[in-house]
Length: 322
Ligand SMILES: C[S@@+](CC[C@H](N)C(=O)[O-])C[C@H]1O[C@@H](n2cnc3c(N)ncnc32)[C@H](O)[C@@H]1O
Image (cartoon, rainbow, N blue to C red; front, side, top):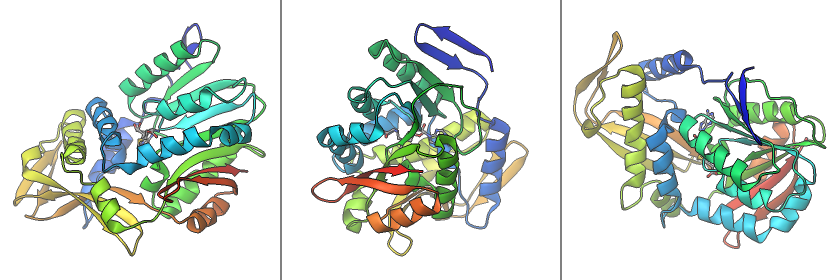
């Protein structure tokens, strides 16, 4: 594994996401009778910026509520996480919630930040290393849906951190398989501190994913710009529109791009036809009751040790142990 080290920041270079594999995922998704695109492609540099804008929107209660739970319950959370731990964050983004943790947990043995967005990861890891000079910071640019090696680190225990309700972007069977991989990674006695969005009134959910200013629409459409740049596709962003709806039966938000007209789009050698009003699924975001998520966690090899929620029961932060 090649690496470069500056003071307390070690940049590992062995895990660049498998671009060819992601290209195949794009092609496979567009060949399906109900077309879809992999949501990890939202997060190029522009997509990460747009996500940060989303997290500040009035309608997007998720980031605000989860952060408030962290702040209000940080003493209990920090004591559950314990001292001397290796903290591994999946989808670290701007690492803002991590700072609340790092300000309170005792003597962390290292912070491993994993993200698919290279620019965001590089900036956030450098900022964390500068803010916490005694902390060993190891950013890993990787797609966490695939296996990758972790650097060898010595700590009392390993605790994974997966905030942001990102677990909801997996279908339940994938979420369970992901949890199983995390359980294996952190090992017996290891933990997972995770943010899980709770089922609620569909009106609140629909607004959260379709804001008045159109930031979520821009975020959704940006996936096409990313695919154009990365894979030489010919999507015209003005020929699609954003749609988000809560599917009550499935308990999930579904985000689509809807074709505004009959059109053909090339991607390398392949041409794809889109009928007028045809939808391309770009993201799902499953919502769970506390009991539903407990069943999923147990299936993934964890016990739920603590559940912290806000007074309105909009969101939960949970500590799971292997
Ligand atoms: C919903 S955002 C959450 C960001 C941050 N953890 C928070 O709670 O605000 C999802 C993050 O996961 C990253 N991400 C999404 N899919 C990924 C994948 N397959 N592998 C690695 N990172 C991924 C994105 O780049 C983004 O930073």
